[in-house]
Length: 400
Ligand SMILES: [Zn+2]
Image (cartoon, rainbow, N blue to C red; front, side, top):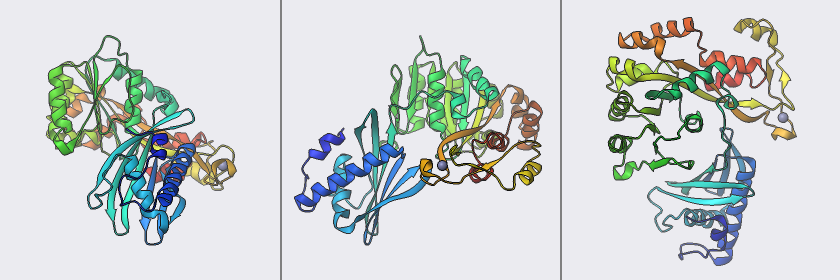
């Protein structure tokens, strides 16, 4: 693995890179861009080759924003430097590649995941920045309501069972699973994760990186892991029937299994698991908790303003005395009106649902139980966050 300082001093490895002074400029430019991305807290840097240059965009709080355009004279050299940095083959331009690297920026140690994909004007390069110094975030700090956080901790304290976090890509599911690992009492226990990729390294926890390309799928690694009999298993994603059934088997044979599913809300996990071939009675016995999640941008506290249609919004959403805000924009938030993100949740402890799950009840019936038990939906939790001035109604509506 390369570090940024090693990389800066490296000579181009092949004649495919432009003249030496050009490649030096490309290195310097790439380094400047990555440092800026790290300082601004970007999660990804997108290098997009265009006919007249290389468009560089940062993904900040989920939103892609233009950083700069690198002149066409540096375009190919910069992409080549990026590939060398990621340990990729710079002579291969027709096939997608992936690589990794490490950089230090101030106190931060960033693990980088790089990937290329050919486009009309050259390869597009995406660099994901994974902050290894990520603070150990509590569920409440992430945005969970106290009752929701208590329900998750209760589910995590059990010796066995299945816990799912659901949501689309980029909804922060992995971060929540990692917070769950931090929250677990792992003393005297064997904890093993299967991840794609391993984003954060946990001391004292065994982590396996799934590699579909060579056949080390979630299902294959989970089958092997069950034979090793760990106490707690984290399965990065359940996307096929075999993984789902192995996870259920694990949960029913004394293991605590944490995983994620791509569903829009928490209750949709139940029909999804049935679709994946899980028997309802096994699901009812194994499931401890499902939580759905979305990330919403936080309003900049310096410049948020009271929503001009505040009264109408309150009436519409049945909230008598709340004040809703909307973004404005100021230097502190670089005119975006939002700074940072929080998660909104729907947390469903499964115990009260077991009979209905076993009886193959439709989602409407499960939703009636949810409402009767007083568990917030994503929308209700988002509305509560907006009523506290943390985010805007428009932002909550955008992610749902
Ligand atoms: Zn602001």
